[in-house]
Amino acid sequence: MKRIYLDHAATTPVDKRVLKAMLPYFTQKYGNPMSLHSFGQEAQKAVEAARIKAAKFFNCSPEEIFFTSGATESNNWVIKGVAKAHQSKKPHIVTSAIEHHCVLEACQSVEKEGLAEVTYLKPDSRGIISSESVRKAIKNNTVLVSVMYVNNEIGTKEPVEEIGKILEGKILFHTDATQAVSYFDCDVKKLGVDFLSMSGHKIYGPKGVGILYVKKGSSISRIQEGGAQEREMRAGTHNVPGIVGLAKALELIKKDKKILQLRNHLISRILKEVPSSRLNGSLDKRSPNNANFTFNNIEGESLVMLLDKEGIASSTGSACSSRSLEPSHVLSAIGLKPEEAHGSLRLTLGKDTTKKDIDFTVEKIKKAVAKLREISGNVLEEYEQLH
Amino acid sequence: MFWKNMNNYTKKTLNQFLKPKNRGKIKNPDGVGMVGNPVCGDLMKVYIKVGENKKKEETIKDIKFETLGCVAAVASSSITTELAKDKTLKEASKITKDEIVKGLGGLPKEKVHCSVLANQALKKAIDDYYSKSPASSAASAKSSASSSAKSAASARGRSKRTRSRAGKAF
Image (cartoon, rainbow over the protein chains, first blue to last red):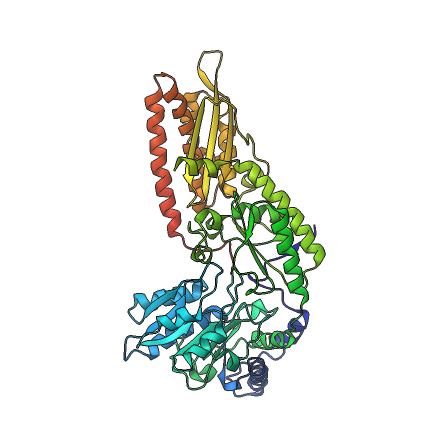
């Protein structure tokens, strides 16, 4: 059976050219960059060359690039590290209610430990955090604003550049750009950010490696101890093949219109051909690879499983797939009722997605939704009449 | 297969989900039971038609379900109707959630509440039948239904505490 992968927001395949660049660093140039000998030197050379490539991509200086194990670590580092570095006053952090769990849970953790107070900004019904709401949330003790560049569930593009202008460099500004790097301008100077997080595996690079950009002079403590790596800011042996692969993946990023056209074709067919369907999140302020739908009277996990049976990989914000019984915090924040969030389906396209893949997927979604609606009958309507 | 990593469903569960038995409505049912709520994501409705066997005992002559919910919810509904069909009302009201889980070859821990819901829906349908007809066994069937409601609530509480998000990788 042919398999169609439409879950690129979860992870992407490693590009063959990336893999090729990485391979020598497993079995031949396997040295530890911190070692003095020639093995260490060649590994260090590779890490520093990667740092220069990454700096070029983000338009910063190489000393501002810190390699981590991925965006989760980068985000944890920013939230906890900035809170820790500002303990002379009880610091205040502004973030949004639709951040990735690694930002939200890091914020909850510093709140719980009494290291900072946090404001969680609500998006509008399209999923956009307004720069005005950020401005209004600023207090005397605000030390950090953290707003994601592109939302991982509904793909909405947040006004990072606008927020950067409002903050004028007076308050530290972080953006989680994990889902943005492949599609939007990540020039840190244009964005006006002090910190930027990203992950290798979302951009056709390897898993287990990422970057935190830290603008020179930004006040942040380290949160991982035990080594002098990354200028004593991030302890732990460098993931040399991963770092080499990440830099290669950044180098290969090419923006083309094809993915947007395919995504729009998918959205227009689904909304036209599947009754009682809707798009979640803004249509125009959106990542070109993301589509997120709600289908009334179906549950997302069931839909994902029926599609998987047809070889199509997708994702849902339904609680049933999350193993907690709460539906997606993002869909709830943009005002969806629990039953609407349960009926959500996320499809995220990649560079190898074809029109044939999309047309096949639309046909299978139509069938699967109809089948699940046969099973569910009118129970939701009847329940609503009773309550 | 590649769905194995989605969730740890057994082959039996997936088969019941892909080809559910006794799906649909019964016109003029003798008893109906609806359970669940849209917040947790599962709604189940069970319809029964009551008949009589040779010993003149009341039996479940026909049973159908409608379910809005996840794979485990649909599969639990389907197996429950299979287990209950042709049983006497007395026997059917004694079906436990463990029998439903066993019929599916096991369920992931956080999905066990689906089996509890299916059991509850069946018992509610039987209670509904008794409440409409003056039968002596109504009291015993009712008590078993309400105890299963309690275990449904506790199963929900348990899975709410398991906060891993394995099915969704964002």
